[in-house]
Amino acid sequence: MRFSLTTWNINSVRLRINLVAKFIKSVRPDVLCLQETKCIDDAFPLKRFKRLGYEHIALNGQKGYHGVAIVSRLPFEKTDIRTFCDKLDSRHISVEFGPGAQLARPLVLHNFYVPAGGDIPDPALNPKFEHKLRFLDEMKSCEPLHPRGEDRHILVGDLNVAPHENDVWSHKQLLKIVSHTPIECEKLLAAQNQGDWIDVARDRIPMSEKVYTWWSYRAADWTVGDRGRRLDHIWVSRALKERVSDFRIVRDARGWERPSDHVPVTVTLDL
Image 1: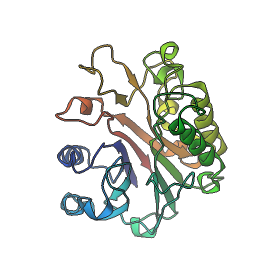
Image 2: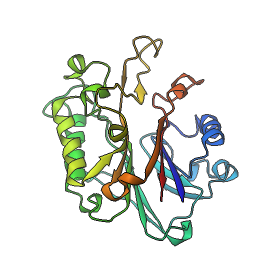
Image 3: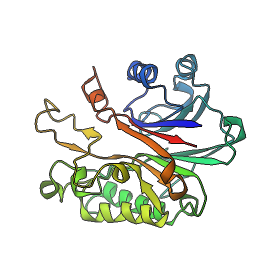
Image 4: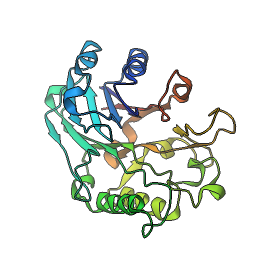
């Protein structure tokens, strides 16, 4: 069975629903994971997604900030929401696919929006950065995020860390910039290693190649200098490593009208 999944920080699902529809009609992923939906669950554009063929929807939203959603053409059996750092700030949702999706064995999908962390990379001076570091520590210690053996798990989302040297436009210049500081990179990789996850992008693209999924709104022209970062991730459990058949970053989406600063990232697996 072919299974395709896209993750996208949409930066307001209601503002950019037409961009989402454009993408869906072109790519038709089985599942779309959104971050920064920025709306309460009752305001989520359910009817539009259902008209597009996505009947199965799991939401964890809040007014004006954060928010994550999983919209699917395939039914899921279970939904779960976890809180981190004792904050009810809508940064996680997971679902489990099973027989209803014609899967012989369960597939668990986690969708995350990790805190951005503000601008000052010092937890003593910046509560937002301190929150981000604690969040990453809790991801490492969260037992349900540790697939083992034959567990078929996928973790996606805007993890707000570009962990490797060529995940940013300039490793040297960004070492003291939030999202690429050594402590953030260490903590994200520790969470990844604790769960024995495979980072699909870096499993398929050599470490020597630059890979980006985000370009700042602050640049007048995002293409000049190509100053990107890889903040959006797809991880699969080791049992799924050999099942990955395709991986794509839709870079052109950053140039669409009124775009998100993030672009869609899609993985295809043969299950």
